[in-house]
Amino acid sequence: MTATHSFQDEVVYQIYPRSFQDSNSDGIGDLKGIQQRLPYLKKLGVDVLWLNPIYRSPDKDNGYDISDYEAIQPAYGDMTDFEALLNAVHDNGMKLLMDLVVNHTSDQHRWFQESKKSKDNAFADYYIWRDPVDGHEPNNWGSYFSGSAWTYVPARGQYYLHLFAPGQPDLNWENPEVRQSVYSLMKFWLDKGANGFRMDVINLISKPADLPDAPQAAGAEYGNVESLVADGPKLNDYLQEMNREVLSQYTDILTVGEMPGSTPEDATHYTNLDGSELNMVFQFQHVNLSPNPDARLGKWNDQPVKLPELKQAFARWQVALDGKGWNSLYWNNHDQPRTVSRFGNDNPQYRVISAKMLGTTLHMMQGTPYVYEGEEIGMTNVHYSTLDQYEDLESINAYQALVNDEKAVTPEKMLKYLSHISRDNARTPMQWDDSTNAGFSTVKPWFALNSNYPQINTKQALADQDSVFYYYQKLIALRHDSDLIKLGDFELLDPDDGDVFAYKRHYNGQTLLVISNFTANEVSRDYGQEHADSLLIGNYPDDQARVLRPYESKVYQFNN
Ligand code: NOJ
Image (cartoon, rainbow, N blue to C red; front, top):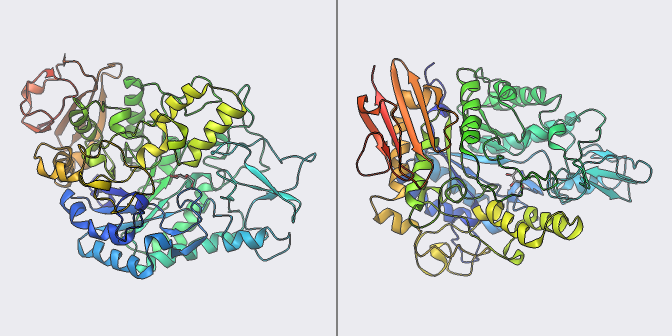
């Protein structure tokens, strides 16, 4: 295999626009702010920028509820600002990915406003409507954001489906007009010069025939839909049609489908290297480890992940997709807690070293790495302790449902779970410097800053040659220069070792050996590292061969 596709050479940086850089002093990040920071991103060395949704939205779910796909959210700027940003990104030799949110729209979208009026209007079948069954919801489906996935509309005498919040009705992909409307909005952005899409929960668009009940945990109020709706019967057909009608009509674009619940076997179809569907997917197996043993609580837990399980999760994807598809590589995004807090150690003594260790472990795998804003300076979880500090509807609704309604967990426990795993951990504003408001804004930000910004910020990182920033810069540069890193196959070493994550990559007779100590203890391991031809990168200033100091990580190359 050789790198025949540009996405196999690239590193993506994810920007959460609300929290990246405010340029007009309203406390909310915006497009001009992003443009101001392009030199910083260029210096990091990333190739592609992905923006979370910037479209007009009532913002019930921070932009994942879109009311107009062809307009910019006023708080972020306008179309002129977008075009200026896109040109500047291109002038800097980078690409721009848009977020495509088409499993659902906002309930304020014109299509839904019409659809809900009657059963016989032009948009009547744009959404998934069902008659009541015995005066109740059509099935037991629960929403990802707690409560029922159905809401009743008296004007139609029917329920509509929303896998997420009631303000996010699911589009009816069975309707060819819906699909054509989606293709048309995709072309709108690609014609402007956008370089591709990150596709929100795209594996949920094809619902199972007849919408049967979902598996329901003992004591749970609703069924858990994911196993039922993920990778539905027509998903491959829809993606192929989208590819034929839109994606294949443009050159050199990048597509990544967010796919909760997908398996590597499914993903070999979606990411098939013949280019008939998508380039890669965001899988969830490594971030969904350590679920709560009480199935009603699902993702809400405060337990560390067991390293052998984490290794197996990555290895499964690395091996299954090698030569057949392509992986995305990520620790962090706007839905996940900060990786240094979850998988590393955010204690000041170990924060920098463990952030570098995690970066090494991920960036040396096969796939396209994604860096989420702030990850490159080792930003940490925010460690909130009261509910009123949270902003995210998933967290707030879950507390309401699990603590107040179902009494499935105590308030104290739930606050611990939120502090460990809530999405808000990733959404605090970017920490640029140690001035008031961290250089993010001149006024109070829309969401509180992490109080550690005086110590952890880009100004500090850029002034310190030993920072996480320069380490990530090196990881990115190493990948750009090495077919072994880009394309080598993957071999997991010692799967049961609970302390050390070690693997090899092989390509054209060369071998890469990656060894990472996931603990705060010194350990010793012999992988023949003394015989390596070179040490490509390591997070300690010297190499003590078999000795692995706390969170030490090193990468060796063997030439033959
Ligand atoms: C996945 C997105 O990443 C998340 O932020 C959003 O809440 C849901 N999809 C619904 O759009």
